[in-house]
Length: 379
Ligand SMILES: Cc1cc2nc3c(=O)[nH]c(=O)nc-3n(C[C@H](O)[C@H](O)[C@H](O)COP(=O)(O)OP(=O)(O)OC[C@H]3O[C@@H](n4cnc5c(N)ncnc54)[C@H](O)[C@@H]3O)c2cc1C
Image (cartoon, rainbow, N blue to C red):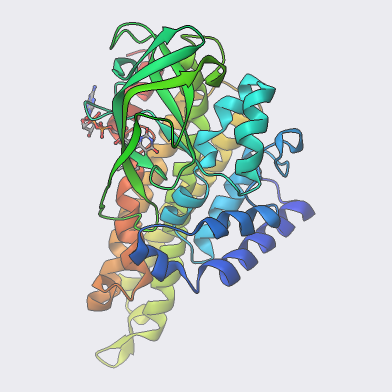
């Protein structure tokens, strides 16, 4: 099974590839060293309609569905971009969907449209210093006070948290750890809301990651997404697209590394012959290619089912784990085939090797996916 190719999708691939070639590749290394991508990149991506893919035109998007978003993610990475770039430039893919689903015109006008136009940056804050896997255990609290909530607590590991203008924040609207969650949009600059350390990481260097602190932050009730205490369900419903995006980043990274390693093994000679002439090397490349292709086919299959509205929570978890396992195997093998050069910052595989490690942690770890799969098996 593969995502059906249409003339529009072929055009979308070409648009994405041209964008990466012209607007990303000459600068990516600088952004990796700077620790963030420039705001202007969001505007450029918005102008050509790339930022809004997967969001309806009625909320300021460019149309298309989950499958189109997957194609964009795939093509960004296969054109030489990276999963870190996806995390930084497409953070709105996790920050906005709850607002869109709530159909709250006020929130859509204030946050969704400007973000899809590239003039605002949003982030999603669920994880707390005490833990990320146990979403129901969130301790950041929002106490109602008239037409405001008063928020206290902290969040960590928040993608685009340094640059974001607003943060879709999961808060507890009952006692801490009660599981009664709501989502509040909290604007940068609100008194008591501070961005702490910019966190340094193994990979995803061009994607800024922050700690956030909330001390008596007054947030208007109108900034709540959907009814009170419905946050947990809203978060779980949107996890499917986040997990499929991470699965896509994983198989696309694997595909890119197969291409890089194949090229390298054709060009590089040892003991008087190209590496690719050795059976051992050819078989290693064949295994890498097989795992990447199998992961791609399965992720596409599950994505088609999600797009068709099927309840495939277990399959989404399996797709993430299958793609992450393929990616982990391939990036390691690709780096090894590059020898010493693979370990240098100059080598693209070096970046993919580092970037790949987060894919089995973010959006629900491999172990949490296994819990979901076990539940789906009735265990
Ligand atoms: C670069 C980066 C970007 C991120 N971006 C965001 C973001 O934008 N927004 C956001 O909210 N979060 C973000 N996260 C946080 C990420 O989602 C969490 O790190 C992840 O969910 C795991 O939570 P934790 O780190 O608290 O680990 P923990 O929950 O403390 O888990 C630690 C280990 O224990 C395992 N474990 C936990 N519970 C069980 C169990 N019941 N059975 C077996 N094993 C278990 C886990 O699998 C893991 O291996 C980001 C993290 C990183 C590193």
